[in-house]
Image (cartoon, rainbow, N blue to C red):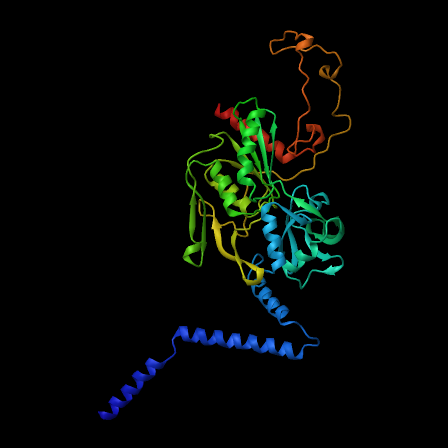
Length: 435
């Protein structure tokens, strides 16, 4: 009996001292950290040439974050400063939004009217070399640093384009990138066209200005409809995407985010007030529409507030939190996924348009346009809507239309945009149907 009690006591003590799962996890962590410290010391002592400690540690941090997903990254002080410049709307470089895929730099979208855009880079292009140096092995921030440089300097990129199954060189001259994030113009039939090129800090200020000026150009009358062009918009600030969505919704959820920790689980709702007062809206998207663009398209689509037209979007449905670190550095860490009001995750799936319209190159047949008409003849008779002749001194000479930049440019001078033409047709049809 006494022996039985001793065995029982020993068993109880053993159970009490048995390591818990948490203790096991902590032991594993310490072993891994010890392994990392040993590797660090071996490299310091035995590598073929001496490497500064700071460089080794920075490389270890970069590798840790880069291995998580294409969007998490360590931002050294210089890169962190450049990122802050970009969200303010002006920076130096080529004008492309990029991500990392299979060890190469993938173009999410060229930013409109920048050197990269003018050089013909497209969404989905893979950058495999920069000035003859292979990209393979570089982190995203290192590759971006190589693409930045002094304004006026040339850079040669080797591009692989999947659709053409070949690689080719593109030489681009670096420039100071000034992003005007919102452009607008009035189209025929009292339809507004608003192009948002990126969701930076300017959007909240410029969108109301755009709608106000479009109404003024429409002789003070309300617009009959609106086309919001988000093609090749790589995204930007989440709060700006929420603002744009809210601008056209009276109520309901805009976007929700879900992460591992409770503080990342958030739901944003629209406040009352639709800047277009229920008038028809079409949102244009393509494979270069990513992140914040997909939030806007998804929210307006789910609430049936807008029809989405174009091709499937990029599919970046993750949220990155930018964290400031000591010594002026920072890190971009994926902390949540976002979901549209209906609960859809866009991650790696994208937004499917309601009306699929691929990009098409439409060329005018020689001799099929530019033919003279009565209205083009000098001295032709002007008549009013009732067919009565207008006195010569009452004839109004209409100036050519202006484009979004305010430069004189007629409609004929702009390249024909098949997707936009279809979008305008849909808005007109919806307006007539509602009437």
